Image 1 (cartoon, rainbow, N blue to C red):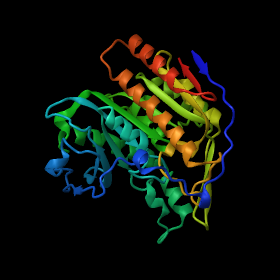
Image 2 (image 1 turned 60 degrees about the horizontal axis):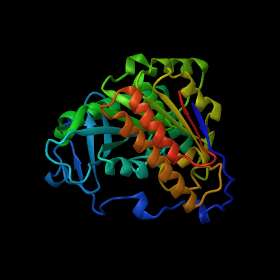
Image 3 (image 1 turned 90 degrees about the horizontal axis):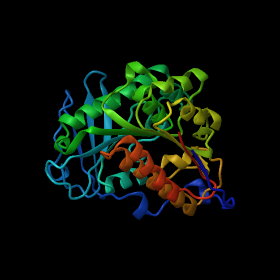
Image 4 (image 1 turned 180 degrees about the horizontal axis):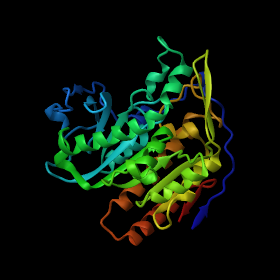
Length: 356
């Protein structure tokens, strides 16, 4: 099924200085003095008591995976007024290359408000540390970030964090272990694809639904491998979601794939549980969900705060409805009908929605 709405192309100006900002009330539902906690060497961690159930926003903390020695910064969002032993779904969020725990804030906040526990992971080597060029160039940092081992390490990060959430972070009593989802943007989408079955050896059977923003199937073989994903899977991209240039004033590196290779992820998924949303007037960084420095990341559409707010609101709404639909206890056919109905009311002219 394909649903298309056409609209007049918006004509907007690039924000002064290339820095895109958003009204704080929508972008960040946070407390100014978010507390941080650290784990000991074996990953054990105890959150401050007030953060375990009643956080009004988020809490940041750091844990270490003893198997990989990777230090992971986490941002944990817990629904307000969550009662002791009340079971709710858990969503793991994996950011894109060059981004950390601030990535995807509008929809992570929306998912929290919808009643889900949301945990964002800042993955070492591939996070915002790439912009630190004191000891190596941006180009060298990017080469290290996209080196083969990092793909598997990001998957292991997610698997470790899920295990920690279910056992040691003070939120385990509130998680429904049968309702765990994962989402990510760009590099995070690749991570999502791998952990849900594109690579059988990395599949985590605890995950029951997934969202990939700016997914990638670089080859026909990687598209076909999506046939190994057997859970509800939502591909989200934009009509200008192609390449992205990383720049620090000295170095610049162009990464990405044509839009057709992003849609190919959807093509490779089995029928019956897949959906694709192509947002009109949206490029790769539309799905970063955070202020973008135009001196670091290229843009393929004119950008204003108004356009960002409208796009991010729509992404937040349609992804929240995806989770609501597929975390429900209804039969799959009713879940799909519920999502189709809600999604059709959210998309606007210029958007394309396919449910296959």
